[in-house]
Image 1: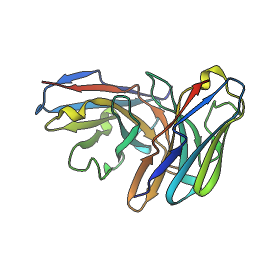
Image 2: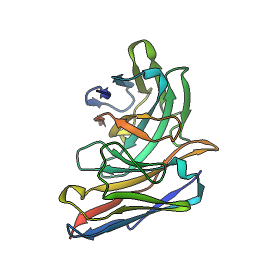
Image 3: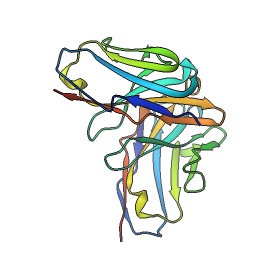
Length: 119
Length: 110
């Protein structure tokens, strides 16, 4: 079964760092893009960026460039989303999703990681 | 950057009725790169349609997508109780490379 398993919920304070993960299984991890999508409470979906684990080619949404870092470790089929200094406005659900590289749609989604940033 | 505008924001319909959801792009989008997703409360989004009109695996044929250029439509021919959800369109653009989601349409029970 193709699946993406995301790391568990996080509660952090402003200014702290954080790295959440997304582990793929059941398919060739290096042959598909992995995308990250933010959903703030009660709001819509926002594309943050994508990474191709095969060669680590990474592209960011202009809205998130410089705010987060996307990386991947293909040896363990895992992608990451990282913050160096969290803000309260980073409170959201974060989804990873497998992205097909011809039509560029997201066909397999993780269940999401809730990040809460509060003092 | 391409902006996707979905309308209406909310659609109030009864089971059995037909739902027509619109997704309008600020500039022309390749049909190959237009997708639709369904999201239910507390769940991750689910891919419905890709390439503007191709149904994803396991998606019932009451869901159909159409359109080209700047205007795309998702149609649900006869609403089932499980279809009441929020629907998003998404496009991929190559210049600059990246994705955009529309703001979503909520289909609610009337």
